[in-house]
Image (cartoon, rainbow, N blue to C red; front, side, top):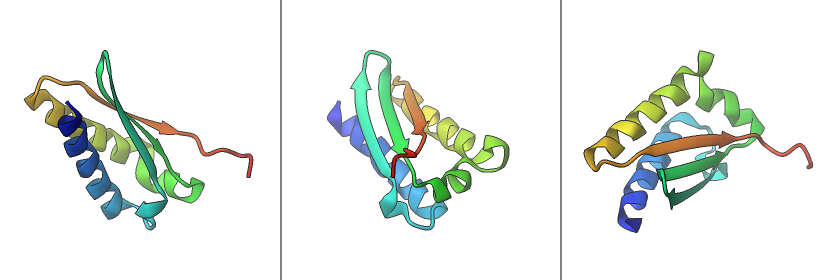
Length: 88
């Protein structure tokens, strides 16, 4: 199952490298739970709008692609974008 999460993670990193100015600053964490594959993405504040897109269209498209990939192996794949911390 860890091989499955790896292919989704590689795909997400590829997408991030095409959308973001500084994809190395993105923090992507994946795990497998009872619902399927779950990713949390923490982006720098200046990259949030770029990844989410106008009206959320970009992130929605990424989620659709992830779900389509997961459907091939009967897995649910979810992506949650975390709010950047205002602490510092």
